[in-house]
Length: 271
Image (cartoon, rainbow, N blue to C red; front, side, top):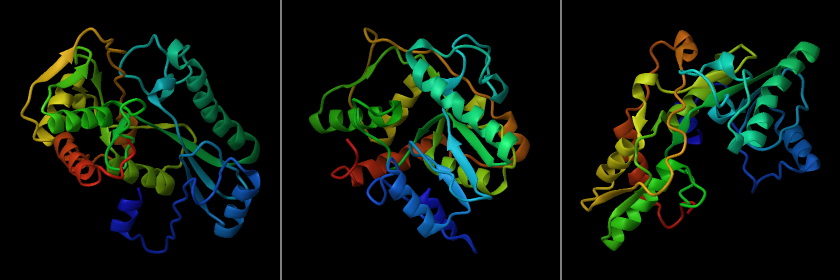
């Protein structure tokens, strides 16, 4: 997002990007001092906690497609968030995130607060977490492929490769979150995603990584490992009703940019 804002240079806006090194957001005193110093009019909430200390503040929180019911019809959309229990593996996380939506509506109803939330699909891109134990699927595949190329060994992908996902480049996500902050007036959440037709299989994603990394070795899909949920197809119809002409970065182009950045910054990436 910082890269996008630096490129756009929006007139009349002053942006502050706050990380854990500049403020401990789990500390009420530190957070209060930060808000008193910056005096924000808008907040994009991507951290664990936030304090609503100033009137007329717009708050944008980030949810997840993991909050949707386990047993559902596809594509999932914003009206289905609370229509059944989530998958048991995500129960605590999912209910906690669902309550952010409830909180937004209750604060608006009682206090008139302008709080909303976004529901992204699978985000990937520069500055991701490439730790193979804790990273998500794309950064995991990129790191695995890099090491396989360095050691001249096969690129081993866990599972059959058949599950399908919608991947969104993090620079596109940054653009959309900024649009939500500036223009989106609803309290109800909005899914931020490429269209259903842009869904790709893990097999296709792994081969895209191999191409972007210029990996010439063998790609092996280890079917002894579990595949996980087959799909979580999400509708972006609501987003498209607002942004009919928004152009997402093509998957292959985003993959090349991400892999190039990863290679150039390997010494310092999160891994």
